[in-house]
Amino acid sequence: MISSQQLGERLADARKRAKLTQAQVADRLGLARTTVVAIEKGERRPSNADLVKLSDVLAISVHDLLREGHVRAEPSPRFRVGSGNKMAAGIAEAVERLRAHGARYVELERLHGLRRAPAPLETLQTYRVDLIDESGLDPRLAGEEAARALRGMLGLGDEPALALDDRFESEAGLRIFYLDHLPPKVSAFLIWSDDVGASVAINRAHPPERQRWSLAHELGHFLRDREAGDILDEDVSLRHVSEIFPESFAKEFLLPAAGVQKRFTERCRSGKFTPVDLSALARAFEVSFQAMALRLEELRLLPSGSYEKIVRGKLRPQDLGRHQRTDEPRATPGLGLPDRYIKLAVSAYDQELLSESEFAEYLATDVATARAVYQAKHRILLDDGSQIPVDFSGADLRTA
Image (cartoon, rainbow, N blue to C red):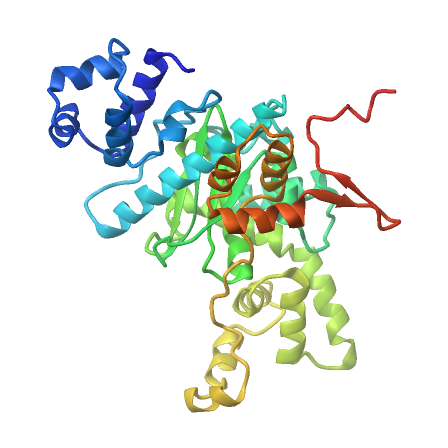
């Protein structure tokens, strides 16, 4: 059982995240303010009935308040959501969801005796904003240089960068989650806490190509100034000084000039380059048709205005019923959780470290869906068709 002081700290944290005063909480519970103060200080332990009421008022589960391995994982004080409008409120709620996901990721690791070690890119200081500013290097050029350097570190050369989630989790330590119900104009955001490291939320309703670009953009912010975090919002101009480096980084990382030129040349061997070729090139690099077209214009491989010319010749709205729509947002399948996160939860449930309800809570879903996830993820398939259980608590394979 956790101590009264630990419980008080968690209640205080939850109250502050809910933007409530001690007096407001006391009023909703029908208690004296001095009683709430004593509870938060650990001088008084709330009754079970009061604890249930507190969890309801503070929008936090009793399980989260009482579990032994709870991780606080507060975002860096330098991260700011803003206030005063509906979008800010929506982002604040999403930031809390991301914070909770990141904290639970660490809790799952601790259940298996694992600890978070700094990832290789966490120690990379070369592209920190203070060093770039001191050197006087153009942030656009710095972003391109960082992308080329990172591509070299990952052994990508000039080839398309694929499987970004796995790469960025292992190399940068990013904990990447795909969230529903974000404001439509918010593509992604990044927060940092000392306990968790960097957590990134990607808008789950956006098309996969846009999600990849958003993820690469957030990695740029991670390299530039991770503790300040970022909210990638369409209403914020990408020409703003703080956005130039990450946007330049994303462009060169996903669409490296040399690699694009090479693939473009190969496509031109038939004697011409058509919209079909442009679409194939976009698919090869897993970016949008528009992003590829504008990149080819920027590299002077296509005349300026080519994309606008293509757009003018697109299908009329009345014709769309006869063709498959490809420009509508597509939700990312699954739970939107990292694969390793899910397997950690499955392994913990397999070993009875989590109850069924706790397992479902970690997966942020209902019990029926959690059972289906367990059936799909609780075994590793071997080449001969046999299976072994997922177990992060097993022996280290590096030892004899």
